[in-house]
Length: 584
Image: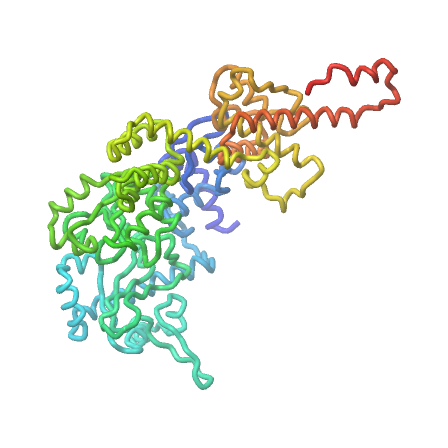
């Protein structure tokens, strides 16, 4: 074992994995393990487990399959490369990292690209304040950005030349083939020869900097009206994936745990300049679930502030849909003083925008109001159609308390009695739910069990029925408390699922709500994985489906018992007794 490998092992011994992870995750002890909500994906039931007493302490999430040791945890949570994660932990426990020639290809590529980006950013920034960049600087001033904001965001100018960056980098002993990996240059082949040229020419340059203060990519805006592409951004590279990043998140002040999500670079820069240092934007893409997950790590309340046009409204609705499964409290800033945040805040001022923030409706209220714009609520037919649309498209997934709140608002808007709306909503949602009731023979798909890893066998429908029944016991234990559904322990006899069934069943009998890993100390790893999948499934059990599943399993058990009997050894009396007193 070389010096660095030995140091890694020492570091992992010195850094208590529970203490480190507890800085990021609220862990609770369950037996010899620790559990909490996974920091790598959105979940409401904890499936993230830390095995502190294992031979090699590690973590594993049964929901998203993230796993690793204390070093990989820091890599993923702090967005650090391996060697930087090692240095991070070494600083934490007061160790000095020995010299290393660690040279993993991906790390080297990423580190090299970031270094090239930093050098390019310096070049572009310098060019902005050169005679060549005067037109770009004048453009920025015309757009209202002051010098402090220009410097804060490290803005730059790419000269109107095919090879200005290439020439600059050659003087630094960096050649086009190296710049190609960072997407700082493009190449073409003519007459059998390869030609390189700058990716950005005659453009405003906007560095994309991550939360670790690294220049990972660039955005750019055309300065010539003849340029067909208004915005051009760095393509995905080993250091950058645009669907995972947010512009200006590195600058956002998150003491209040709030973010404002806008559409454009200028929206963000203007808002920062006017005193809203928690504005961010997507990097040339529509909002993605990865970006929602990223934001949920940095804020609790998200304000959507998209352009004041039909495209902006559609983007807002899509963003609300993406945020549904997160813990973010979503509000929508309604612009009425300009086509976008940049224009609105300049025309109306900071106090105006503060008022918009303080009066921003929550996502459900916004959807209700937005749908209402398509109807004349003075007409009975329109009013009825409007209420039905809201109930069927906006209300699914709301809790009973939320349904109560928003029914009140809908009643106020339409003049219809709240109890009438609430009863209609409950009937409609129940009917909608019944149409989507789960067939217990099809729960393999609902629970994401991989059919490639377990071929369908003769008893597969039985297993799927058992999976459905167990998930129902977890999701709706109240269905089993009044005795209407007759469970029998022998349904799971000689089955790997018996321990799970028994643990849940015992809790239900005691009137306790089954919780994740509450009784998992007695389960093996495979059983724990099954339990987590059951709890994280999206099954919404209906009493009739559960009764049907229990009856099906009992019938199959009887059939198996008959198949396994040797009738030749039965007396005539015992054989005839098989046909007596049979239940329907």
